[in-house]
Length: 245
Image (cartoon, rainbow, N blue to C red; front, side, top):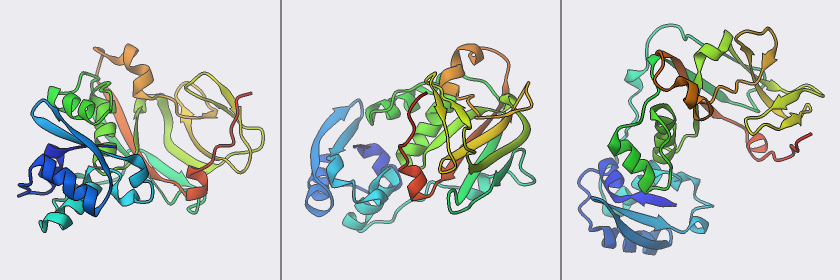
């Protein structure tokens, strides 16, 4: 797993350890570092993944920064600003049938979004830690993943009708058309994320992923987008039963 030295410094104000010294301290106190390399004006510390598999609190720059702050006896900066959340009723409703399978599913709508390349600093930061820049919408989700690390997905809100996301167990024989072109048959043990699809009355999986729809969105009119973050129960997150039909 790759960590940006400059990113860690932003989260640990006052950090003055040299990159090589920080690498040494992380290795001796927390996890084995595999090396450090220069990347433009930054340094990238690479940590052995096997050293982190039992430490999910370190999966992301914020978690590693917490460890670095403890090592250096410094304060940790919290990048999350809840006051930026818009007030009032949500534009998209989420209905969760079983909170043991999905304790939380959040969606936030952004109006008048246009797909475009990300700023160069964001492209560089993602590239340095091994994430390929795609476009401004997808890159935001990957940035949050690399920092917090909260997995997120971006969707085109124009593709939804009914404005409700349904989180529930699948029904026996229910089909899933995946983005890889395969069709999967579900059963009652599977967790399904469904939505009314614009232009049709049936509930279908929301498949308007920006990475796959960039070609017909780039350079066209502005449109509403929503970002989703979810917390799934451990058995659901580890589920690997599906095989294509």
